[in-house]
Length: 349
Image 1 (cartoon, helix red, strand yellow):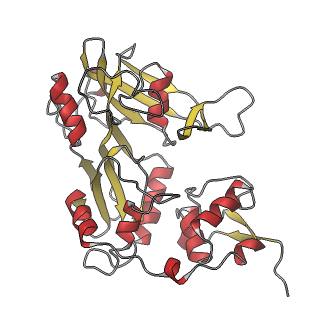
Image 2: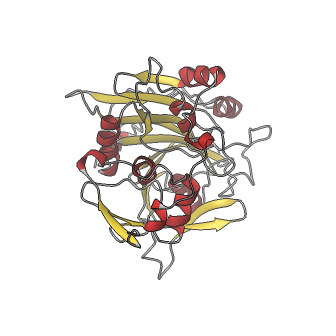
């Protein structure tokens, strides 16, 4: 009997919080990442009737529309099916990036220029490196990325060491219960120096790759609500400002787009014009955006918080030195009164 043109599969409890692409990898192992992207772009795969992206996290009871072409997907080659391996050089790199680890989670300080996940033309990425370390003393099963950072964004990156941890941590991020603080250098000085940016975003492809922009009237169906709190920590005259950014939502390029929208693009940002006018000569023309701190409840240890801080990357330290900024001015572990200027305190919801 030929398969039905379309089937609807209900997400089971064991898959709660799993990313859609990883759900497909487990249930339809012959569906390659590229083929899944094609099905998603054409709307043939949907979740609860909605068009979604491959990084959509699915919940128990959600209904996934799966066309028969997924069951008849082009068969993976033996090379594609083979268990990935990680070179000694890359294993040493991963180990050098670890800033916190226990039996359930791993936290890395991601460097500039290293992709988190693979894609077209991206053979080397953290997800692949981690997968290639399965079977070592560190990973008994495939580790799972809990969230993402752009290739050129540095800093705190949370990794679940097993599926149960990924499910629980995925739920934390879905409910916006994780407090994230980013540090950035922006062009000029924001006015006012502390505020909230609320601007829905839509995806818009451009000559330099995918980017986002503020939604326009009539685009409500594809607009993504986005909110960011910002505060100036220090300034360099009127040329630049060191800012703390606290995203409430977690949209692609949210911080980069929001700062550009208020006229203060992040320095060195080649997607949102932050590279067109550098605040000083001899500055690294690189994105100056760093995931500084992450605070959330530990998924398995009652009454324990994960509170992790990542040091600034070399190019930002060079800029701080060039501009006379002190990266040690604020102790990230200090918890004080947010309204009195403590930019390190997790934002209260």
